[in-house]
Amino acid sequence: MQEQIIASKLSFSTLLENTQVNRFRTLLDPTKVNRFNSTPLGRLYNDLLAFFAQTEDFELDTAKLLAKVALPASLERNMAAQIINYGYCSRYQEEDTLIDIAGYELERSPSNVILVAVQELKGSKVVLGTFRIAWENLEVFQLFEVSTGRSWPHWTLAQKPGEAGKCSMHPILDLLSTSSLPKLSQLGNTYKAMAFTMMWELALKLFKDNQIGCMYYIASPRAQQFFSHMGIRSTQCEGVLPSATQEAQRLRREWWQYFKPAELPENQSHVYYCPVESQ
Image 1 (cartoon, rainbow, N blue to C red):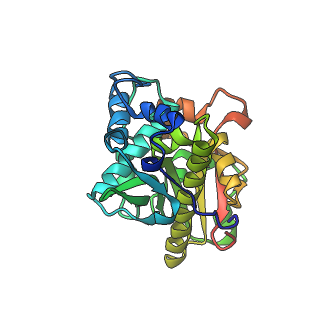
Image 2 (image 1 turned 90 degrees about the vertical axis):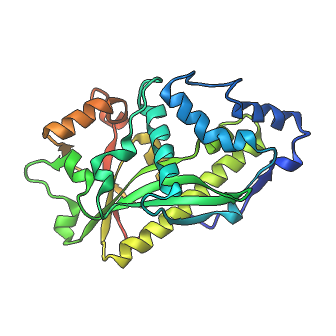
Image 3 (image 1 turned 45 degrees about the vertical axis):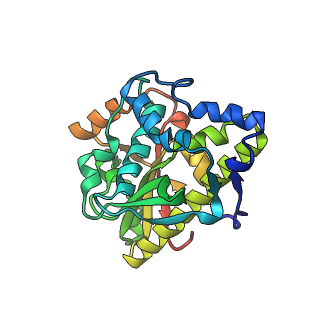
């Protein structure tokens, strides 16, 4: 992993007189800006931002972040599902489409673990980042298969495999990181990096505790760029093809903007192999 990230924070209570920050806060007002209008995706977007829009002052502080496992049926798990659904649908579906990707049958597997990055804000624990890990019934083997004469890396190395996926951040962090204001953009990017780092370190611990020797993940070029920037050491799996099963083909059609089957290989999502011990 990369070197320790310096803690950073931004208190809106001390910057409300700043006209630039006030202009940023208008992005939190659903009556003024709603990228998706009154669609189901737009309502989810507004629900996620409601806490920040209704709070006069709040402080995002990387020093107060906590990574943990979200328990089944908990509020944190429900919020994580909302963030995953918003993150994936806003990027890889039409603007009026909301699919419950977090509620797929696979996500209810007993070995499925939802990790969250949480900060307490005004007495409420708010999930600001999430991703999933598993070590049974792996999605990667349902969506992909190796071509004739090829082997999955864990077969060759006699490792027990796990998987990581469904990485997504709260839209408040996207608003910050894409801001034209340097201080806000820096905070958003720093907060995302810290949230991911903490969840990743917890994932590695859980993998090691369960004798998992390696993990696989599926990533778009944009996501892989972020993972590489975060210092994750992985290699793209060669000789891997889309599974021919009906369910795998259905998912690829449903999420064609993620898999991009008609695009050049460098623009498509790929499978990556990541040894646990070398991280």
